[in-house]
Image (tube, rainbow, N blue to C red; front, side, top):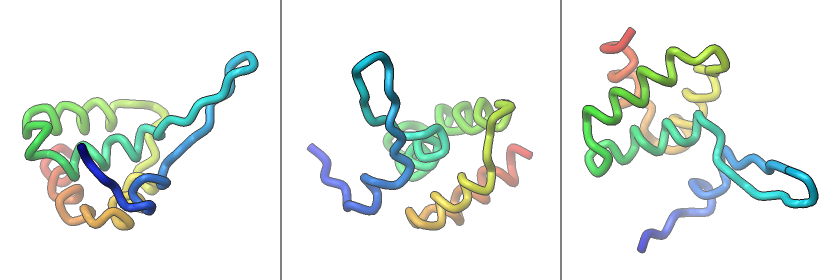
Length: 86
């Protein structure tokens, strides 16, 4: 079981509506930051692959990615990964 702070839990939440149903999901940038933040649990190769796939997306938003990483205290490690990949 994991507990997250309210800040970590609420950043990047989007509400999706389909028909009469609505549900909340995290946007892609928040998901990438969470993977980078938990890279030791996820795996280094998987983290690299996720970042590579994110960077290849047309709809990527690097500024939002940086803002989330800064708010969630993993901007330094994200910058290291991005420097290596780019």
